[in-house]
Image 1 (tube, rainbow, N blue to C red):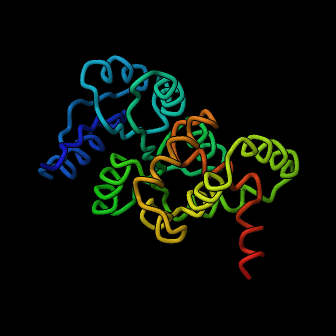
Image 2 (image 1 turned 90 degrees about the vertical axis):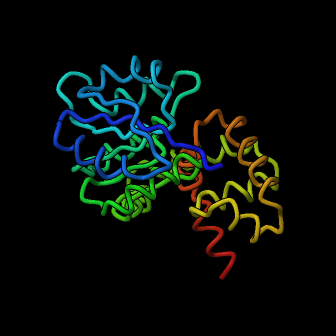
Length: 227
C-alpha cells in the first residue's frame, strides 16, 4: 500500500495556499493536513498534525520561513522542508539548505514538478530547482573558498573509504539506485552508508552532505581524475 504523504502549507498569501491545496490535494497519495500564514505557527501545527513534508514560504510578516526552518529542523522527528519562494538570492538559498531544508523551489515551478518534488522529498531525496543548482556550483568559487574547503575536508575526514565514495555520489546529486550501480553495491547498502554518513557528520539530510562535498572541492578532483 502506498504511503499517504502528509503535507503542511506555510505561506502568508491565502491565494498561494489555495493554489497549492488544489494542486496537491487532488492526488490520492497526498493529504493536506494543515495551513499556516506565518512561520511562528509552524511548530504548533507540526506537533498537532505530524506532517511528512512542509512547503515553506520565505517572506512572512512575523517569523520568516528560514527562521522557522532552522527552529523546526532542530527538533526531534522533524518533517522534511521544501522552501517554495519567488526569491532565489544566494544567501537565502544557502541559509535554507544549511538549516536543513531538503529542497528549494521557485513558485513559478510547474505544478507537476512541485508534485514530484513533494513525493521525492518524502522518500528522502533532495530537490533543487535548476537556478539553485547553478548557484550552488558557483558558491564553491568565491572568496573564502580555501578556508571553507579546509573545514569541509576536515569534517569529511571521519568517513571511511566506502562512505566517502557514497558521499561523493550524493554530492553529484545521484539517487541511491544510481550510487549503487556505480559502486557495485545494493541499494540497501547505500542507504546504510548514507545513514552512517549523516550520523558521523551530524547532518540532517543529503542536501547538507552535498554542500559539504561541494565545499571540500571533491567534485572537481573526481572530475579531473576521471578524465
